[in-house]
Length: 239
Ligand SMILES: Nc1ncnc2c1ncn2[C@@H]1O[C@H](COP(=O)(O)OP(=O)(O)OP(=O)(O)O)[C@@H](O)[C@H]1O
Ligand SMILES: [Mg+2]
Image (tube, rainbow, N blue to C red; front, side, top):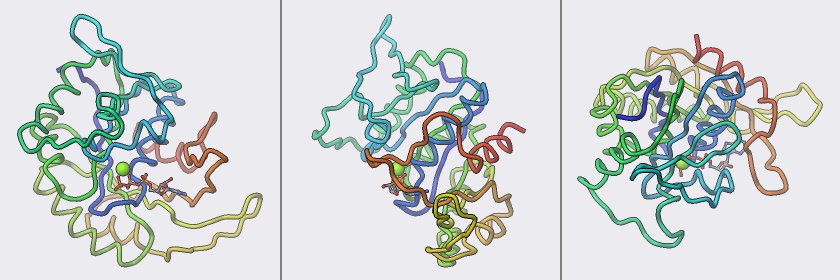
């Protein structure tokens, strides 16, 4: 196992809640706080990290091991670096475990304090496989603020129980919208989902992330100094 240090998986029972966005911004925030940080896209079939980071590089190899792709101060690995963009990834079951082995054992991660894993949506095999390979892995569950998200709590909770992973806390994403330079908060997607989920799962609410306006390239990844809502979460993780 070449992957060392703390491993934190970002998961949700639901798709499209912002797991990948949160995983990227959290990894960048930890790196900004001086932690050696890696980011692994474990959404093998529906990888999105290369697109989110606008990375087209292919990992170089050294003595049959891969060198992760650098983005700012983080080291990144994704299935998207290894297959052609439009080629379907049709591997199933046992192959999945092999990809995880490949990412954990055959990549020259170097020293890492934190590795953030971006999980695919749902309650699938990846979380189970991951737990077998990384028994000390912790999970962050991402939800939206809508009260109906509590139903997802059951699934997210079952997923964590089934896989045996410890839950580090809940992040409520797309919590509210604040117009630039104003203090007002508009709860466009409702309120209460994050705290309710944290209570159901008997864990802490790590933080709430507002809805951001994508930049001209369509990106919701921050540049430079991390926004406060991310540094606050990163501080809780480092504790
Ligand atoms: N806080 C936010 N503010 C504005 N847009 C956001 C925010 N978080 C995520 N998004 C946008 O929502 C969409 C879904 O986000 P993302 O891909 O991170 O979700 P996901 O949970 O990883 O999805 P999937 O289940 O498909 O893996 C993207 O277009 C992303 O840019
Ligand atoms: Mg995703």
